[in-house]
Length: 211
Image (cartoon, rainbow, N blue to C red; front, top):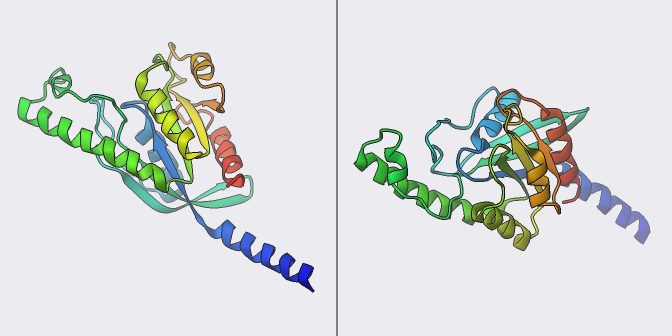
């Protein structure tokens, strides 16, 4: 009788777990393609994008999210809360934005908002179930920002998938990212073209299984 009760409890808990909305966070440095990737996913499964993108760094300065995004992959379905976060940076100088012909007042405002956004993004880590770290595959991964992000995730023991974005570009080099963070799975994609998105969904589903 006891074994039957345990069996039923396991089935019921499994049912609730499958219906749970998984909090999936997108983290990384500015302009790595976090919002572009989140937009593509949300557009594919809800018909709506999550936020705007720009060549100017720190376009996303507040955490933005879309709930109840049901992702279907190979006959399976999971519901996610997609969380797109501001680009993580160790220092944000308003003078950086002046290079984009932004007025000084606007540049200072953007820098202040971006700094607050970084703090907000780190706070949201405590609420994440799974995190996708989006890195620009054309950039050197060995920097303080990336180490800080990975360190925070490791400390919280959050399941991580590293995405090497912009693999459609000639200078893209996924091997450097793999070498920088060998303890994590690294997947090369292009948020712009949609390259390897099927593999991306497969890896996300694998991580959710471990929760």
